Length: 615
Image (tube, rainbow, N blue to C red):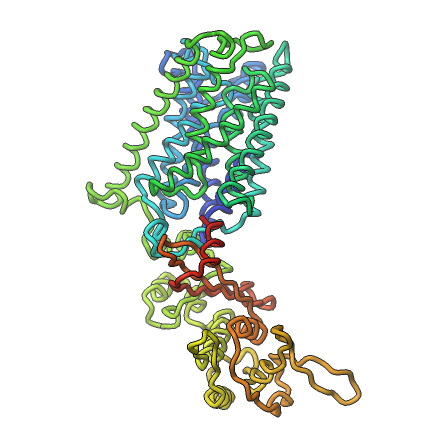
């Protein structure tokens, strides 16, 4: 459940063209985590005999023939393996859309080994942090702080996504591809988290059942505080206009991470402030990362590292030694002094230093091996600009994105990318790019229709638009005689109908022109109809119309949806205006065609105020 939730959350947070790549990384997480943890990880974490630094036995994690001993070992192995996989997958979200798939595979193998050391320090009876008196019930240090610091180091090595902070791309290019997938991932994580926290009691005998059910209540109470905090934060950031899904999701996740190390050792009412502060820390860290130009698409650094550190500190503040079933010292707010709080700080420092040490070495060494340049490890770790632009789904997994944006360079048979696909035997993708598939032919047709509709429209001094009737009608005749095979899937437009269509507007609202059919009631003309009745219509004598009318007409004539988004670009009032046209192609093999056009424009004062919601 947890792995599924991480996969859906990360896939929904990245741009189109990377969803399959994200899910594949989560799949290999399970595979290689299980392999490494079975062979060496479990032995390092819980092997006997052991030292304060690591375990020395159980390589691999086989239980032998003893019924009770083998059952206990296998149950603990499966549960702890899930913890290791969770710690590893945090990096896949933070490094989404940049980290090469073939770099992530060895990371999954090796990260588990170093996680196992932290698990031994905090979970095993002989671990030096636990022996000192530090408390971490369900993995605040080993899973979240360790994984969050690894994610931070990965993002620093990889750098931000192309155009994320330098203004060369509109902010809309980095919006989540599927908020629905994000919300579904949150729900999977939410209820899986309750199982994780409750299951960390490792049983229901004696007083363990009390500990387990208390963990469930504190976890839920914490998310209540986190959810409300996320809503208030989102309303504050958008001037009381919107509740952004990312704010709500990261607020809840931050509260879940914060309560993880403390869920068994605090009273149920203490979970509310822990969750509230955890959400604020997660959201605040992610906002601060943006100011520092640290690109983290899912907010993993703030959620796991930031809220994880707060959760460990919360134990030192709220822990209650009188609660049944736990062995913990009193926190500062329970008149226990600073002893436990100091031990929690030591745990944070040890975990953070360990994560920085190993992850820096890993990414640097792997980067210089692949790039063959000790000064530029990023080149070996990161996908190329072309791969980032087209999407890792296509380059690493051969998956064509349903919403692929087509460019003019794809029309050329000599395009280097197309030839690359030809050489590799990927004729299906090559035909798709060169217009030999029905899908691309249809997209070219709609593009040509839109260009014909707009090429004779000129802006006048008063801000209105003027249509050249003679040139438009001449194009209509030329279009009828055109033999372009790529425009053949559907009939051509009737430009005389287009002009009649303009004339038929009523009170600013565009309506379809009417025609009389003998024996039938008046019907609306079909703009795509091949009926010759359209050709007999007389053009209008008033060729002046405003931009709103033209947009509505193009949408109706071309059967397209025009969606223009203004995104804030600078304090001087400039912004990117992105227009996306989605053509309905329900009868086609690949679904909807999306084409995006972006230009830099100066915003009006009202549009500038509206653009703030996209910050």
